[in-house]
Structures are given as C-alpha cells and as structure tokens.
Length: 244
Ligand code: ADP
Ligand code: MG
Image (cartoon, rainbow, N blue to C red; front, side, top):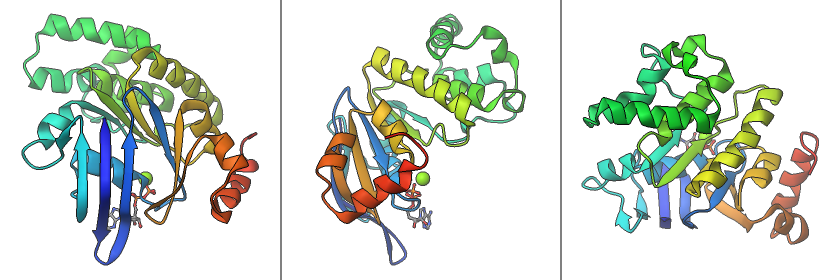
C-alpha cells in the first residue's frame, strides 16, 4: 500500500532519512519507533507529499507521490497529529466536516457519516458543538481521528497521537484504537516513542535511529534476536516505563 524505495531526505547537510527502503502492507498496522529526531515524522510527511525526497521514491497505492498526484493521495490518507491539529476557530463538528463540505458532499451524507464516526470513537453528539479548547485532550484526539476518517481514507497515519495525554486517558484510547484499527482493517502507520504501545497496537514494529532502520519485526524478535546493541539498549531504556 505504501512504499519507500531508497529514500533520503536531507535538511541542509543533515540527513533526516537516509537511503531508507520500507513498505507498509495493506490492512496491517505498523509502528515507527525510535529516539526523538530519528526521522519518524519525516517518513509520514514524505508519504503525504508534504516534503519531497532528496533521493529515491515514495509510492502510495501504486502511484508515485509527486506534484501531480499528491493532492489525490492526501485525500486518500487520514492524518492525525499529536495535539489533534484541529482548527481552533471551528467547532469540533465543523472541523470533522470541513473537507467533506469543501468537496461539496451532501449535508445529509456528512451528518450520517458523523453519526457513524461518533460511535466508532465513542463520543456523544454534544461534543460536536464545542470548540477545541472546550474539549479534553482525549476528546480532541477522538475528534482528530473522526476528522481523519471522515472521507473513508485508504490508510491512516498517526504521529504520536497519544503523546500529550495523561496515562489513564492514554490507556483508554490505546484500547479503543486497537479496536478501531481491527474494525477498519485499514493500513495504519503509527508513530510512537513507547515500545509497550507499539507492541500492543502494531502487527509490525520498525525501530529507527539517525534516519535509518535498525530492525523491523515484533517485540519478541527484538527481545530474542536483536540485530544490534542499540536494540537491546533501546528496550532496556523503556523497561522502566512499561512492563515489557
Ligand atoms: P522524529 O519525528 O523521529 O522525532 P523528525 O522526522 O521530525 O524526527 O526529524 C528528523 C530530523 O530532521 C531531526 O534532526 C530534525 O531536527 C530534522 N528536521 C525535521 N524537519 C526539519 C525542517 N523542516 N527543517 C530542518 N530540519 C528538520
Ligand atoms: Mg516526530
């Protein structure tokens, strides 16, 4: 569904992503994990066509991501960022409906879809009339998820969607996300810095460092067959935070 072939992205002379090849299988959830600055968000931005590779090629559903294709591709992808990325001057409901209205979808169709999505993300309709500042962090992320799913995207990219939430809210949303990913059966790429979360939510984990892939597989692969000392170090650094 999503493929990066020998992709590099440099900012100045610094390589954010270095000669990286990676594919995200249809219907699977993949977690991208690694230290801050290792290039996780850059990978999502490359897929969305928000940044261009310095070398190599990115494709989505058989199409190369470039100027002529990026708008169509972006509409086929749901994107959720850490703070929800909602427009503060629009109500939650208007945030969710914005793109569908822009595309001229019928209001009855939009309202029907919103009702479906409310159930999916477990929110009650009263939140729709609130502005983002009047929602809790967890509610904002659920609205962000509704907005991302509004147009029935082929894939869902989430950039540390739970990063800013307190542990209880985070745990609740993790449980719900797992169910939502299973219900949707979509291709999902989830950026996280939490190995417990990656192992819980993803079929496949990609561990990165300095713009390169260190190892990909399951948590068990990392534990039993680490490909380098960094894998073991990364796991033990996480051990204090989560029960692995
Ligand atoms: P991560 O999401 O893993 O924390 P990023 O993909 O955001 O990492 O960033 C990878 C590297 O690229 C970092 O060193 C970051 O400072 C750099 N970088 C990202 N975006 C830009 C930008 N717009 N301009 C300059 N450097 C950037
Ligand atoms: Mg990031």
